[in-house]
Amino acid sequence: MKSISKSVKATCVVLLLSIASASANTTKALSFDWAPVMDAIIQVESKGDPNAVNGCWVGAMQISPVLVEDCNDILRNQKSSKRFTLADRYSVAKSKEMFLLIQQCYNPLNNVEKAIRIWNGGSRYSVKATNGYYKKVMAQMQEMGN
Image 1 (tube, rainbow, N blue to C red):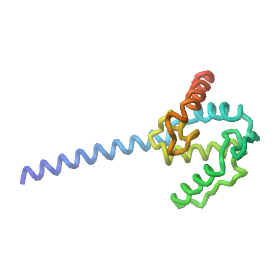
Image 2: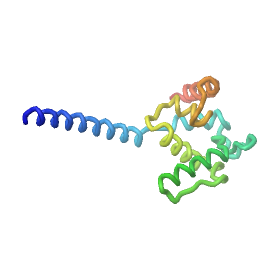
Image 3: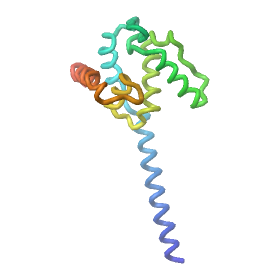
């Protein structure tokens, strides 16, 4: 009986440690400051122009219709009634909301490199194809003092 009791105690300790770790990751995700990354992306993408247009990519963060659709799919899966429109791409605030939603879904550990590469190459990005963009955004962040 004592060996079962020790085994149960050990399992409980492991479970409690797992819960504590998951809670710390959730807190980290909620408190992460994406502002320096978003600000650098805005400078690289459009030099801060919320009315910038380059083909199907528009706004300060150069958002495509596919990204808007992806955000709306994420919201639908979260059972949210909120939806983004194509016109929202011209709003810096709503563009940042879309960025944050994409990171929440595809980058829950808040990896800055992954965030930049996802923004450029999508959730299935290629490291090779996104290298130039990644270097530009990192250089911009450094120039901005981040």
